[in-house]
Length: 468
Ligand code: NAD
Image 1 (spheres, helix red, strand yellow):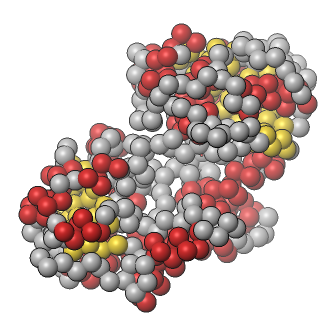
Image 2 (cartoon, rainbow, N blue to C red):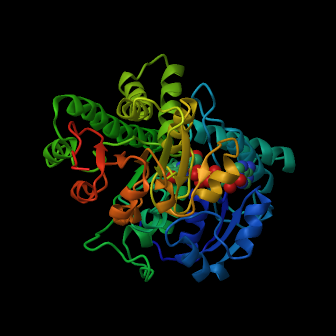
């Protein structure tokens, strides 16, 4: 399947975390990329050369490849594109199934603008199994309605599930663990292999600010059918979600029996069959994917008359964790009404400003429902929180230090690296009670003890007692 690297015209429909990262990365590999989005404010920001999301290295790479990138709210560039990526949102509906309305509109628009040359339409949105066929039918129907003839042989739909993690989206795109492509049309498979070859073989020069990980070899290419590619995405997210929930379930027992979950996780993770990653006990997962994708997997199973008790339990354990930390704080403080609680971190994880399904917001709501005053800091997500969640009556602090002023407790929710080195001695003196709840087992216990903090951790039975 050897092909010469060539520059292609590519359109990406949806310029969010996935679409924009994909577009910028492909432009970096030398392709001419047009990012299409219905959000005109986002398009305007991008046209001005500004990245609308916080993602490590994305602004820098955007500037570097600006000459090969276009941003528009018009679908007409699809006509020239050899490959069209779909990267629109598929948020969850109340019954757990994904809302496919963005996908439906995008597929229809692609059909209405399909050009005369063979086009590969690649779905990167996370979609229920069978959506590839549905997208194909929509494109076909739209094409017929516009052109009065069939689009036979003019396009093929493929699936390229996205595994990037927010916070390291570019790194994961340029240096992935694997590339999975679901394609039943040989020309589609060949085109995508050609497109991804520089990544598979790691032949592109690494950007100075995103060096290639040492020792990275050839990237495995998994070529499969559409349904398997779609299921791979859901199964991968469900497995990662349940790994975290598993360690959190063990952490609850560790707290009771006086064990230390960090030692337990290391002890089991060093078994090569288990692995140490995704075994950090804490407040649990959040973000735009695990919650909605596990719910969507359950909804798909239901459609086929199946239950998935393991996935169901992973979700229950995860969402219960948000209540457990509030209960533990209540046990500690006895009364939350009128108390001031500081939160360190709002984003669902560090290095992103994404607040979708963020545990911080859930925890803040639960604390406020019990009468506490909540103030919060985040290095990059404050503006987004003010903009997207105006109903939350949170007090936002521009400096992490301000969260501690007169607080009865501070909870670390997001493990931003800068929180590790706060001036702890000084901060202990600013609080009414020097109590810190480390929801990610991230801070240095000895340092906090020296500073006079009472330090609660997840899955660690007896908190470090201090002389304060
Ligand atoms: P996002 O909400 O950040 O971006 C989606 C974009 O699509 C938005 O800018 C929206 O305006 C645009 N859009 C919606 N309808 C459109 C249309 N008809 N035409 C053009 N643009 C349209 O979402 P995201 O986080 O990038 O996720 C996209 C998909 O990728 C989802 O299915 C998600 O599950 C999946 N995914 C996301 C991640 C992640 O970490 N964010 C990782 C893997 C997979």
